[in-house]
View 1: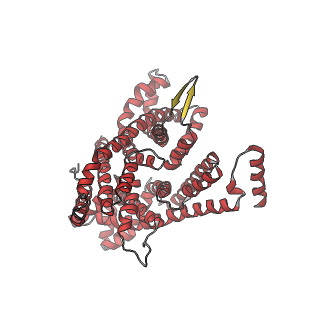
View 2: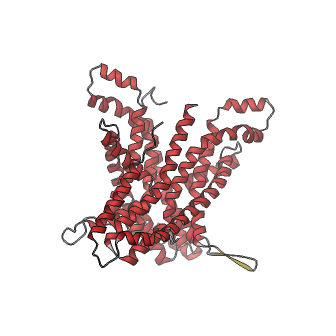
View 3: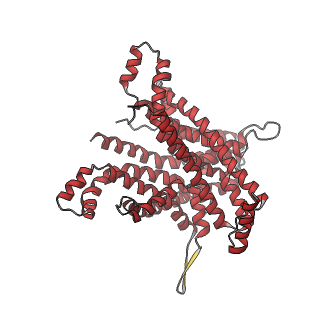
Amino acid sequence: MDDVAAWFLALYKTTGIKLTIFYDSYDRGRFLLGLVTTLKLSAYCLVLSLVFGALVAMLQGSRLALVRRAASGFVDLFRNTPPLVQLYFFYFALGPLLPRVGGVPPLGSFGWAVVSLTLLETAFAAEIYRAGVEAVPKAMVEAAAALGYSRLQIYRRVVLPLALRVTMPAMTNNLVNLVKTTTLAYAIAVPELVYMSAQVWSEQVNVPEMMVVLLVCYVAIVGIINQFMQWLEVRLRVPGFGQ
Amino acid sequence: MRVLSNRAGIALIAVFVASLALAQAAAPPERPSVLALLIKWTPLLAYGFLFNLLISFFAMAIGTLAGFALGIARISPRAALSGPSWIVVQFFRNAPWLVLLFFVMYLLPFQFTVGRTTVPFPDWIKATLGLALPIMANVAEIVRGAVQSIPTAQWDAARSLAFSRRETLWKIILPQCVKRMLPPWMNWYAILTMATTLASIVGVSEVMTITLRITNAESRTDLLIPIYSYVLLWFFLYCYPISRWTRRLEARYEMR
């Protein structure tokens, strides 16, 4: 670690390339906090949106027309309005209305970012699930019914396992988009990667260097996600289905 | 084809009207009503929204032209052309829009000096360029996908009729691609229009910046939900028809 720090310090002294995050412990701490916050935000929103997305997709297939319409309305609403305005709506318009618990607002900027991004991603995930469920051949569902499976059993044991595999590429895309969208949380001062980097560059005046670091970070995260999902897709492949 | 329905729009209008009515009822009589405030600020908001549209038009035009060239380079048989363009596409597709926007905002100068004349380079043009970059990469992918979706037999057939590669591409393959490229291209336009609000983060005075300024100037908590749902509604009314139309085109082309 010391060698790395020394190398980057030497780099600064000889070339003027100022990457303080590698040798200044305060800047490094800030940067790592940003990285961890971005990953945490992405992880929370991912898990929540997968759960709620499945729920909304189920509601979209409900027998009650009103429930179906409400679910589709939710999806259309969040997909066709700017994510940034949604975030502002939750944080600036809805946030102050919530009753304070013991003198403090119940949700901070991080909390509101989770809420807003989760709802946005839920809308996208619901559409993906729906497409996946529709892609399961009807004959398979009928065959399962003929074998005496109940509706829930068919959903759990036949439709869902196949639908999940069909949706993998779209889910990968969605996850990548989610990580990219977490940058919006910058606007409401969530200490995520862009926000912390902006703090570093405004103090150290090393905008170009930090920009490159930022871009490399995001491209690396996205690359890792893509690789992992590709591996998972191959691992879970059902022979003869979906090719 | 599904009937064109506006459930989400109705929901949004309901939120808007309900919050407006509540605010209207709760407002003390000595202050101007929320409705009056909204009407007062509508021209300014409209001006801001037009600016968003302007940015979206230019960014789409630049992104499409550059992306088209990049997409053609991407499918080139020459590795020296297809390799680097692959890297460019991957990079700009995977980088967050906001980071690209910061990149362009901070690293381009605010004016150019050509000879003796100084050409100013205003913020909104820089923002337009920043938003055009991811559009470029995605349009390149659309072009590549569309060209690859044309059966290879057509290339072979054109070759046997003595068409050169360039002629085959421009006269046979690309004309067929236009139809396939249109729906995803429109989809990206809708995404871009929504992304133009990002310009407010880097200081361009578009509709979001103006909204924040209005709420600061009025400092009325009862104005917050009406004005934000108002702005959401504007975007929805612009983007939702595009997305419906996209889906319809997709459905229509899939049939053939």
